[in-house]
Image (cartoon, rainbow, N blue to C red; front, side, top):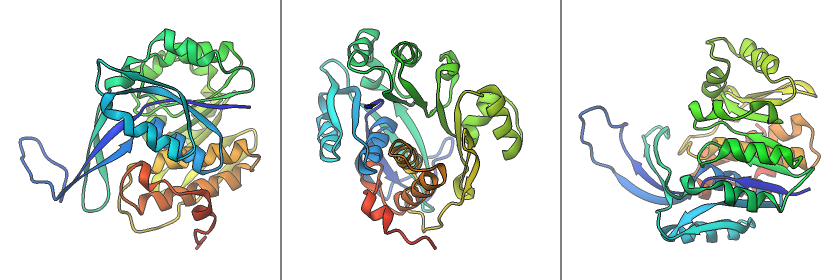
Length: 297
């Protein structure tokens, strides 16, 4: 079994602010930090640090060579990473307020240079029983899903950022959804409470496992192992940028290594708590040993 993450790589420009900029307002940033990021890169690092053997496919520009180095240092196999000469690496402008919350503007760049031909070349190295991880920050996602399904791969989708492109995907081919409440409401197109939301997701996607993340309220699973709820571990929040990606990587790494749903949810919750207590996206993702020693209470 091989794990392929076909996902984004970004250069994150993080501006530390007293508050998020408002319409018509000009404010001064306290600090600017530049980090490796992108939901795809973050999740690959989380998968690898959690003990998974992961290949990362994606695209960078000449300005993003250091992102490949970051992946390699984390133990991720980058043989399927494409380098574009005529387009910049994707980037994110991130506002981070004093409370650690953030808002993000994405520029797709090389992430939107993924072609059907590249997808075919990458997927030719994978087949039945292998796992594919996808987010929504690269081009040709519907095609990649179609071709991966044809090859017998199992597919995990984190539909973020949630937009109309997600609805172009054949969602019946998705084996596991990992999503937050905003994304879940957009999929079911109704404003309902947590219990009803989970039920509607299961009714619409009875073939798939659902992991619904609820921020400070924890997370909940619905699937072949029934229903499982997980609390969130409370820590002082510094930066929430990669918390969801850390959760996704740790949860799926645990499941693919034979952990039960409850064990994997607990590890993912601990890992994401550690991530929000540190600055940056990729730099905040903890190693497995750190997560194992995180105090349960």
